[in-house]
Image (tube, rainbow, N blue to C red; front, side, top):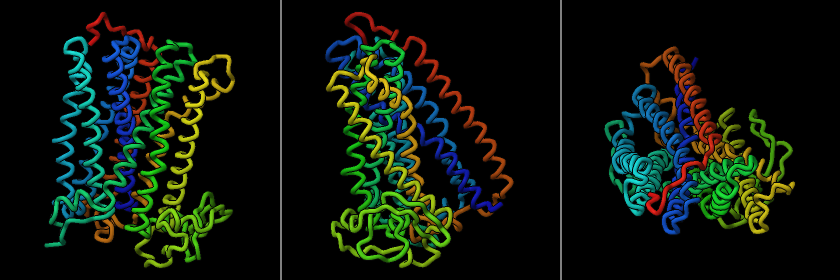
Length: 453
């Protein structure tokens, strides 16, 4: 088998599994900031219990996320040595910053948060979870910086056969960093909201501590509604504009624009055939694509036919780009609808009404929806990474030229199988621990007296 394909497959599997956990922990950390604040300021025992319970689930998810994240960086030196040599001067800086300024911050204060309750003051304990949330947010920024530079490289010069840093500021704030970062952050807020909301809905259905689980359900729905809307506008809209302007090949691929047409439509649904690329059973809104991307219904948008065939995604890559992007959009609209309906049920005070068919239907769907924001994040990542192919660094280095030349197919295949088994065990362990914590009297940890912290 092709070692480059296997190296890409291994990285996709490892980062895809790891990417389950950061969105959940980032979103859940900020929700815990809110619950801990309310519990502290109101000296509300119920909110304190909510914080203790979801703090345990946060710790479990954070631990698995750390374990799976370490593996990814080793691949740069094994499977992608040519890439590391080419961009090491630039790529290493944000990764180092992430470890020094973010990971140590969140991991250090996480210990204080988990073990400092009743041992430190209320203010310091709340401050510890705030620092965890800020640390996770900063960590996400530096990772997005590193990946965004691959999408829209800036602040460098090509010298001695490698990219060398010329301007740290331009490299960090390259054209795609901020649009991608804000969009990723609100996606994480959605993931955290559905995680807390789905588990709370499960407990309501079990008639388990309805007062407490109802509180966390209401908070997650309100938080999730705001985040879901923000994922569409402004962050999703701004990100689409950025891709249209800075990566027109990717934009054409994900939007299904394979040949030049007047007033290209915004495709809502289609079946894609890739050889040659053509959309069947297409449903779209004429002219809306130019209006969204450039603010002009008559905007001249390039199609894939305007670019050299060896500089655009094709075949399976083209199919993945289009399908992943549109699945992400579909899920995004579902999140808005689901959370908005939840708000309406809260307003009507039916979110915990056991006799209401609509409420029970919504609660059950909320439970089933827990993994959907993670699926949307994965679709977004596939869109970003596959859509820019054949480039690993856009317009500078192709993926086929970035792989290690000394690592064989057999070695990569063996490591794929090995890590696959390890990740399967870690995933099963994560689900088992979550299930165990959720079903063992989740709100039985009652803080004592006024010194609840």
